[in-house]
Figure 1 (cartoon, one colour):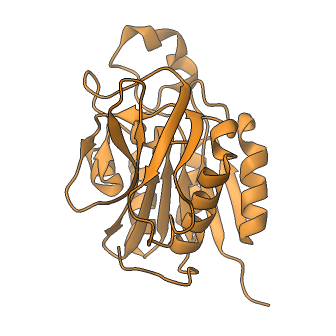
Figure 2 (cartoon, helix red, strand yellow; figure 1 turned 90 degrees about the horizontal axis):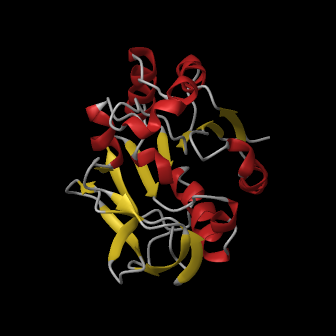
Length: 237
């Protein structure tokens, strides 16, 4: 019997409880035929990642130092987080060994005290510049319908938050963009390579409603296959 691919999923954070989306992820992992372990404790999850090679790291956590605005002061005890050297080393080691990364939504805000995370994702949230409109209906437009992730997905609408005006790095391949209430469009799906590693970023996915929209769910399912080199067409981008 073939070995099942293995996944470490780092999740949870302020206003993004893991329990709210756990049923969706359990179903997706079962459908994808992978063995996934989920961790709300980032250090614990990264320690597991370092113990034995995993095929895919998924980050949908919202964990950052929270020292940028006093409005977060009431939440610091529970959610403020500075990524330690061992966790950084585990993630870098995973990618260096050719392990894949799927980063969702709040991953672009997380680990704000680790400059390399911006380069790993291909973008970063910039406090005082980046923003998102209130949660509401948004339209996502597929820019590359030939890529294995977005093939057969088509444009779709979903209730979500669109993270806007991030600092984007050169060299990423944007697959889709989403529109906010003022009519502006922002990149929300992209891929790139980090050395030997494949990286896919999905800025959508605030809650289970968005994740379960047919187009969004299909793109995520196909992203897992592409990241695990199981797509029928594994384009280099």
